Length: 299
Length: 279
Image 1 (tube, one colour):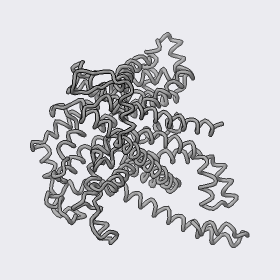
Image 2 (cartoon, each protein chain N blue to C red):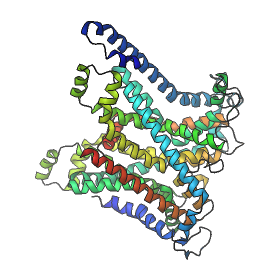
Image 3 (cartoon, each protein chain N blue to C red):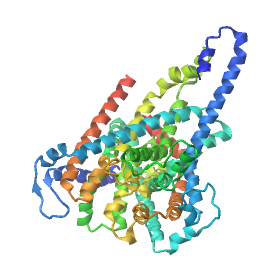
Image 4 (cartoon, chains in turn purple, red):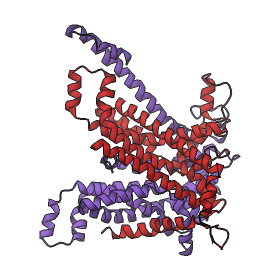
C-alpha cells in the first residue's frame, strides 16, 4: 500500500508502465491474503463443529484436540434421538411453530406491505417509523406483560402462544420487506384489472401476489429464521418439555459447568443449523437484494 | 388492508408497552398478588443500583466494539471482494454462511472453541507460543466480554459485507473512471473517492446493528448468562434476570423504559446525521 502511494509521484508515461503493473500484482496478493483470512475465519468454526460431531466422546473432550477425527462415528447423532434427551420433540416443536409463524406473518405482512406501497407518501412514511420503532423495542421489556397476557388467556405452554409472539415481532419488518418488493411492481399492471372491475383485494391476490413470489418466499424465510432463533419467548412462555423448542431445550440439556458432552452438543448444533442453512441459501439472492435495498433506502 | 397488522401490533406490542410503563410505576412482583403504587421509587432505585450502571457500561462496550469491528472488517472485506467476478462470486455467498447459523449454535460453537481445558483456541495459541498458559476465556471477567464480542462479530460480519457490497455498487462508474485517469493510487481511491459514497450506507447499517446489539439476548444468555460476576451482563440480560429470576417486574420495567428512551435518543441523533447528509 505504501509502495502504491510512492508510485504516484512518478511523472512520465514510459517509466510508469512497469511499476504500475507491479503495483497491480502486489495489490492482488494483498487482496488474496485478506480474502483467504476471512474464509478461514468464517469456515473454521463450522468445520470444527462438523468434525467434533463425528468424533468419539473421548476424542471430542481430549485435552489435546485432534484436527481430524481419528475414528469417524455417528454415535453422537444417534444418541440425540435415542437417549432421554427429547431432541426430536424440540426439533418438531421448533419446526411447527416457526413454519406456521412464517406463513401467518407473510399473509398479514402482504396485506400491510401492499397498502404501505400503494398508499402514498404519508402511509409509507408512517410505515418506516413504525418499523424503526418496533425494531427498537427491547423484547425483554415486553415479555413480562406478554407473559401475564398469555397467562390470563391460558396460552402459556401452547404452540399458539409462541406463534403469536413470533408473528407479532416479524410483522413490521416483514411488511417493510414486502413493501419493497411491491414497489418494484409497476402500477400499470393493476390498472387493467381495475378496469375489468376487480376489487382491491382480488387485484392483490390474483395479479400482484403471483408476481411477487420471490418477495413472499424471502419474507417467509426471514420470519422462519428469526422464529427458529428465538430464545427469549420459549424460555419464558413455555415450561413443559413437550412444547419446548430447540434453543431453550438445547441450552437446558447441554449447559451447566460440569456437562461437557461436546460431541453431542456439536451433533445437536449441526442438526439445528441444517434447516436454517438450507432455507437461507434457497433464497440467498433475493434475500440479499430485499434486505440491502431496504437498508440502503435509508428506512 | 393494514388493519390486521395494526390490530396484532396493538395487542402484542402496544398493550405490553403501555403495561410496562404502568408496571414500572408500581411495586410489582410475579410472586405476590398485591401490587402497590410506587411512583418514582423504581426509577430512583436504579440510580443507586451499581449493577444497572455496570450493565449499561457493558451494553455500550458490547455494542460499540461489535459495531465498529463489523464496520471496519465488513468494509475491508467488501473492498477486497469488489472485483470478484464469475466463479469467484461464490466466495461472497460462502462468507454469508454465518448469517444462517442459528444463534444458539454460534453460542455453543464459541463456547466449545474457547473452553478452558481442551479448547482449540487455547491449544492453538499455546502451540504457536503466543501464550504460556491457557487463558480463562469464558471464566475471567475481562476475557469473557472479549469472547462474547468475537462470537458476535462472527455472526454479524455478513450483514456489513452485504451493506458495503451494495453501496460500492452504487458508486458511479464515471467517478471511478475519472479517478483512474487521474492515476489515483489504491489508498486515495478508497479513502478519497469511494468512502464518501459509503457514508450513508454505513450510518444506516450501524444504526440497525446498534439497535440489534442493544437488544441482543440469546447469544450472551447462552454463552455466559451475563457472568462471571455481571461482567457480560448487558441491560437485556439484567432486565430478564430481574423479571424472571428475582421476579421484580416493576423494577425490571423501569429499567426497560429508561433504556427505550436511550435508544430513541440514539436513533434520532442518527436520523439527524442522515438528514444533514442529504441536504
